Amino acid sequence: MAENEELESTETESRQKILVADDEASIRRILETRLKMVGYDVVTAEDGEEAVEVFNKTNPDLVVLDVMMPKMDGYGVTREIRRTSDVPIIILTALGDVSERITGLELGADDYVIKPFSPKELEARVKAVLRRSISKDVIIPAPGSPSTGSNTNAKGNKNVITTGMIKIDTARRQVYKKNERIRLTGMEFSLLELLVNNSGQAYSRNEILQHVWSYPADHRIDTRVVDVHISRLRSKLEVDPTNPELILTARGIGYMFQRIN
Image (cartoon, rainbow, N blue to C red; front, side, top):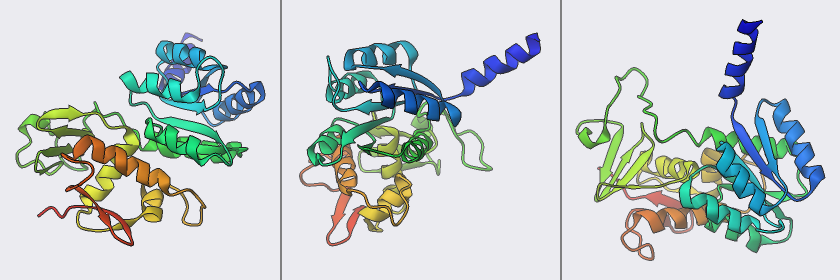
């Protein structure tokens, strides 16, 4: 029996934890049930203040956050979380309110789901965002290569890309500007990685959504989610975000990273 208890404990610890914050009890109950069914641990909160408290206590791997909540709205919760954490955030937003979605993304959310939504759709978004949010503090060597060690000694390391003042360590999923680490969310890094690994190649917004957010090709989505993430990256990496030299706009197509020789 002790062996079984130890196995159950290990499985519980290995499961990813999701915080669901929504003032509608029915939504919390449905999402908690569905997410547990597909293998996640779930904690819940019914208002913004409780969401921040539960987040600090439980350290979840992802947050599903309603915009309109009492005591503190989803924007306030996002701001509080982003002070200290790059944990993935998916916001739940009203169907017709584009400004809600854009504001949430600008504050640091990784993705959004429009109410009313299918639980299956949310499960897909959770899976996609978590997959793109590998810990930036764990070294993940390229297949068949030895551990690279500290990226401060990265000369000759094919996992480190340097262009100008920017150093990108794709193994550690870390970015440095003038040797100072720049905090990126998992989705921001995955977007940057796509463009850098294909420098000089232009990607449309729909192609970026397919590669980074795992949206199917026929999925109708507001492509401004890409524009907001590009804007966030530029604000963190460019010397002058209004006149970008790294992440370029490909007129009539989308975006590209400057060609790296």
